[in-house]
Length: 226
Ligand SMILES: O=C1C[C@@](O)(C(=O)O)C[C@@H](O)[C@@H]1O
Image (tube, rainbow, N blue to C red; front, side, top):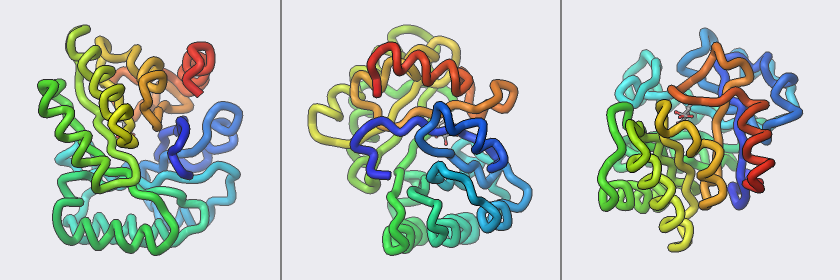
């Protein structure tokens, strides 16, 4: 998984979704924080699609119920699996140990690092959004910002920041969560966003405003986003 072109990820807590995702997705995002025995599920995984391992911090919208060090240790362990092509680590964790150590272990294991930032309240002002993307792209092989749009200005700011970061040579992934930002999930790849997320089943969405996988794949393909 090199993220030089768009990776459309089927986001799920259940790796049994993988066969249904194959037709449309390039990868599966395994939300370990939402799964009941994620390391056992990884051991049993024999699907075709590469995995992005995510063990999301509750401070960023996840449900990982463990102290920081243990939460990140799960990702380190996950990265040792051949199927895991990338781990997602929050930018807030990557600024210090144990996050930097977890990223180094993941890289030693051959996995890429997605440095992520989430804002479930708002879309930051343009300068702040640009700074976050720059910092995230610095720490990760991809810098990701998932923010919340409440109007079209917010959505435009996300697209514009994506375009500017890509023009600067930063590898980024962006999406505006929520209804007002929904279309950015289809359009951001045209401005350089390198990862899209969608659930196989819309009832199992992992973030507000997601399209189901088949719909997002179709929209992106029709728009020429991959
Ligand atoms: O960070 C992201 C992006 C996301 O929040 C989204 O808005 O699609 C979905 C999450 O599963 C993923 O980890």
